[in-house]
Image 1 (cartoon, rainbow, N blue to C red):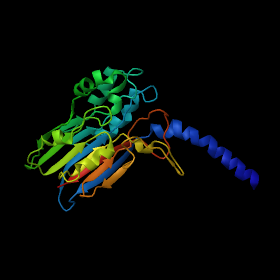
Image 2: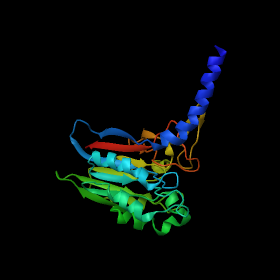
Image 3: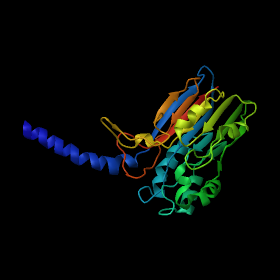
Image 4: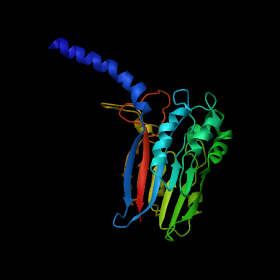
Length: 269
């Protein structure tokens, strides 16, 4: 019996690194959420991607399965909540990235915000240019109002990165006038508390990687992603915050218990 137990432990110890480095990082799990007043019909479908962090460990061809899954959802809006690059100085492949991101289709539009890695390694010079070339509008303390077919108004706004940029909630909200539903994008989730009391319905964030590697009694947290780490939260004024666990990896190119994520929000209002 003891030999069987020891053999089992050895097999587990051998399997875990293989799974963490080779299997889980290659997944792309779709999470679907219905938000808002579900007694009303669905008004909008929003797909969120975050933290692609292209690198030698997450080459651009890894996006092919993501593109297929995103387009299968037939979204109205696609949003990207920052960190396109992991280290631009080491791996950039701009034209390949533009080609891949351009394949993602949305019936209304595609929007993005800056992440901290989009400033480092020289990425700041090209990030907005790359995203624009792929038909993403980069919202930097800015926003715009979208008119839907039934006359309802949706505001979508975005903050500059909160670690290396100059975020301003007031500046972003100054673009907001009449609206029926308001979506705000930010890379770092812990700044979401700054939106409490602003009549914002949904905040979408990334940055945390969901901890990236979750082991019993051990959880890694990033700066400005310590309070809100993964999934759906309700703030004190009932504003909803969703923290996407991202697609790529950083530092240690492994995932354990936090698979790469595509978030799909079906909004009712």
